Length: 264
Image (tube, rainbow, N blue to C red; front, side, top):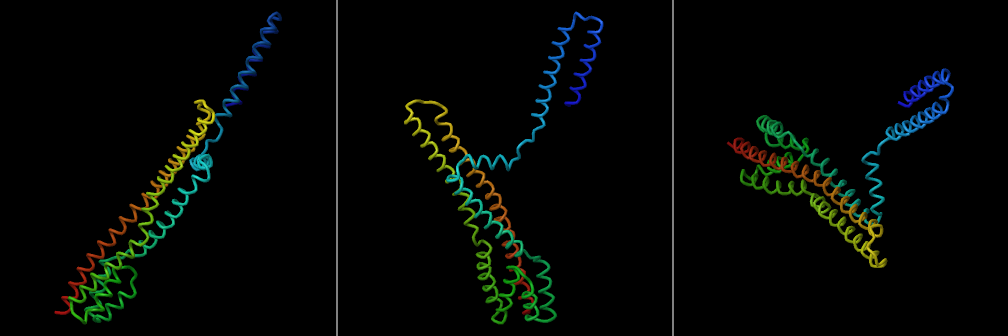
């Protein structure tokens, strides 16, 4: 773009020079026109450079806003984000490892019961990870005491497995609630600081309160961002737990039916 303007400027100079060759009395006018063209090219080059300047990314803007908000007020919501993400990632990994193909496991246990009896079915459960396999194992382990005892063992151990699935999830909900409140506390403190400056100055000037109000708003925004991020992870984890619990309930019913048929 800058080259284009330079070419146009040179062409204009050549045209004006040809004109001066035929009319020497136009020399002052030509000089003035050349000056205007050079100034125009310089202005255009500055405009192109400003337009081509790289724009700041979202993470850069977020970093700047974090620094402007103040380390003291921004640190607490940041801690909520770090701890909440740590718990969420740990739960997601655990729940993914706990997911089992229930239909496949039920079919393998049924085949093992038919071919090798209860011990063979228990061996299948030992070699399979996840809460569903653990429930199956507990029910098969009480098979000698009767179907009713096996069913009670399945129900009781199902409650234990649900507790394992929901472990530490309450911490995520705590951080979701805590982050906006900590941000709002920074807002209140920032507003108090702004009003203290007004009282000390004795005048209502925007420059006196702008800094305090800016800090106040930034802490609230950051607290809300933390809560939104953790809320997404929390909803995913809860949905994953519900899915596994439904599989556990279906598997428990299937196991009881298998035990009843095996007893007959």
